[in-house]
Image (spheres, helix red, strand yellow):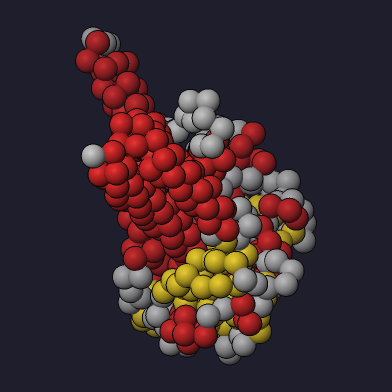
Length: 445
């Protein structure tokens, strides 16, 4: 009977230990793979955006990318390999994954790199015929699972030596914390990112508990970063809605026709601002989804600029047309008009007003420049102000007048035309924003 009890205790303890180990291992490894994949996709988008800028410092960009602890980024651009960490290169990549990514497929694989397990994620960047790889180490999970395995083995031996009753007691004592860990992993996978594990004073479980909690902290931090963009959008949407509701309430409470007219004027202004924000967000969404299409047609750049100035009541603004400027270009008329409008509105809001528009170029490209009389854009901000919801020092110092997407849309529209946009110092002071587009219509797919 005692032998049977010991055998039963052994079988049960081993079975439960293996089940707990497998559940914990599955949760930890799957979660790390999913986080590594999500982070690699995010970093690949960051790299793609950086590659759109003139003369990007790829090595510096890789070094600045967010990643899991100990992760390494590797990319191939124009046939040249770059690494964000010393000692990493194309030899660190699994050949099968590298071949798949080179063929335009996204994938991930667990492989041994420098005798340590890693999750390797590969993402093709078709726009630049580039490839991005991220290597995320799994050694911390291996260490945690090793501690767990040793703890389970000790528990099983104690259960076997003490007999059925003692074995049941010891198994329960060991497996209860592991059950809590499995439950915690399940809760985290379900979205409760604040779940943590307490070792309850058990020194054997402290290494695993600490590793598990560090992993949970890392998951929460990564997800919160991904939510920041959503939060920015929510903030920008709430502001005009609150102003619209306020204007409506004022109009309802006032009997004075002038007060009602003022409230309605404010409501109209905020509604137009909200409409502009929604339109900009939809445009950004179409670009991100890869469904933005160009409707190319012959356009006279001078006539287009004159029409935009007329619509904005800026007919008196000086327009200089260089003798070498092309008379006709193949562009999406609506998008080019939107680009010019955004630059003029940017000059009005943050640059003290536009002072001159210049149309120049040659047989291959057209350049449309908008100059203002502001303080200019500092050198360290020039690469960042074309980002989404990015605001320079001048914009942050004053009231928030725009959506924060105007210059980002200019950059996206220019990219769709296979062109570019940049900012430099105007000859007479202030900032000079320049759009450069191919004359023949170089639309990107």
